[in-house]
Structures are given as structure tokens and as C-alpha cells.
Image 1 (cartoon, rainbow, N blue to C red):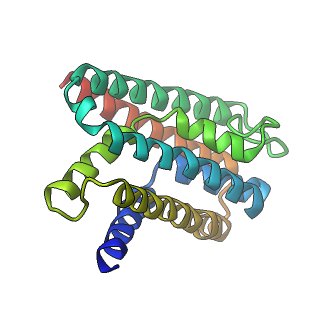
Image 2 (cartoon, helix red, strand yellow):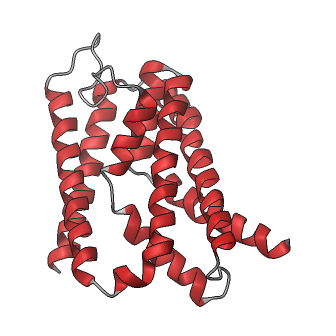
Length: 208
């Protein structure tokens, strides 16, 4: 029982810290919470969580196969770079066409927020190398063992970590934005900067 609780905790910890680090999902959840309220933001969070858990479970199942095919990991890296560049462009367009009565371009659509969370998360396959790295580390240090039950518990912990991490941004992020009276235009500037920086860093990593 203690072993399973440790695996659950480590899954939560890795995912929670990963979400707390400023990223595309955390910024988007903050923006949805600010513009539409907590309920749509939580729907978005659950959508993100479903895909992240799926990516993690696939990573755990296919770890050995992926590491035997470095071209696959390289392709995923370039897709991730393209993902950040696209989001940067969308955020810049939102700044340029900003109007106080309008939503940001990223949210100006009628898609269900749960489905939107799934789509946005699915477009970021960079989660696979992230989870491959951490899963391999856990296996090397014997915190996680190669078994279906432990893999499932680790995945569940990661899902809880994703939800709690994004909830911090939904509540605290909304508070910070309200406290400093920041509007969507300012948030889009921050997002454009982050996405652009992340895209450059990813491209640099790929060609380095």
C-alpha cells in the first residue's frame, strides 16, 4: 500500500510542478477563467487532463519502442516547436485586433471548453518526451516498476496533478489579473512572449 501511495504521489508531484511552471495550458486556463468563469475553465482543465493522461499512458507502454526510434522523438520535437509558433502568432493577432468587448482570438469560438482542452492538449505532443524523461527516471531509481497496476496508479496521480496545478492558475491567476487590473490584451502580450520564447527555445534545441 505504501508503495502505491508513493507512486501516486510522485505522479501527482511531477505533473503538478509541470503545470505550475508557466505554460500554454496554464495561461489558457487563466484566460478562460477570467473571460468566461470558473466552470468553463474547469471543463477546459478536464479536457487537458484526459489527453495528458492518455499521452502518459502511451509513453509508459511504448517507452522502449520510442527510444529505439530516435527519428520519432525528433519529429515530436519539431511538431512541438510548430505548435508554439502557431500559438504565438494567434496571440499576436489577438493583441493587434484587440477590442474590449471581444474575446481573444484563441477563445473566440463556440467549441465546448472540454473539447477545446482536449484539442489544445492533443496539439502539444511535447508532453510525450516530458513523460518519457520522468518515467525513465522513476524506473531507474526504482520508484516506479514496470507493471500495469503501477503504471495506472502513476497515470492517475499525474491526472490529479494536472487538475490541481491548473486550478491554481484558474483561481490565483484570475486573482492576480484582477488585482493588477490587467485586461485580455495584456494577457495576450504575455502569452505571445511566452509562446514565442518557447518556440525559439524548442527550435534551438532541435538544431543544436
